[in-house]
Image 1: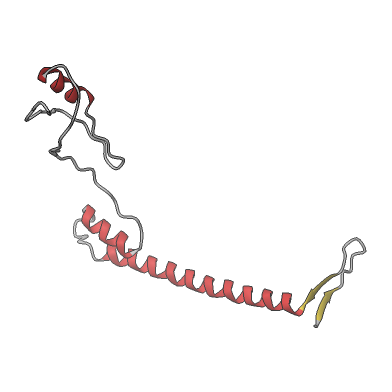
Image 2: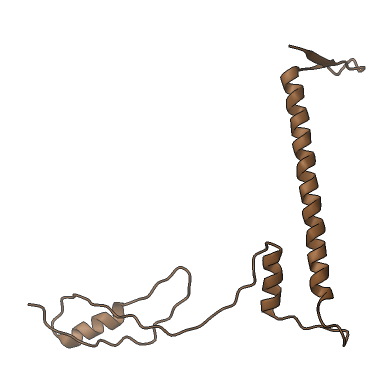
Length: 139
């Protein structure tokens, strides 16, 4: 196996030797880095072009432009970026059944309304009203 040795001209610096496999690995790594650099430069060029085209295509007659969130999200999607999000509010109904031990029906309603919670890790929810529709003694 061939070896390349780099001789130091400084007495305090040791010579360095590389074998054929190590040299080939350095060459391959260098080519891979060059290829990656080329891809990144191309991507940066395309991003700059897309941004310029986006703004160029807007109506600038008044010297100003208003861009809505839908258009911005479309651009962000083309640029492979995370889109802007919106907050939504809504009303929901949950229907279910329960089984609880209590002295009477009034206690059942109190237990259900006092101890029922809705938890969702994606949304913040607030329970405004719990209505018990039907209570029957289970035999």
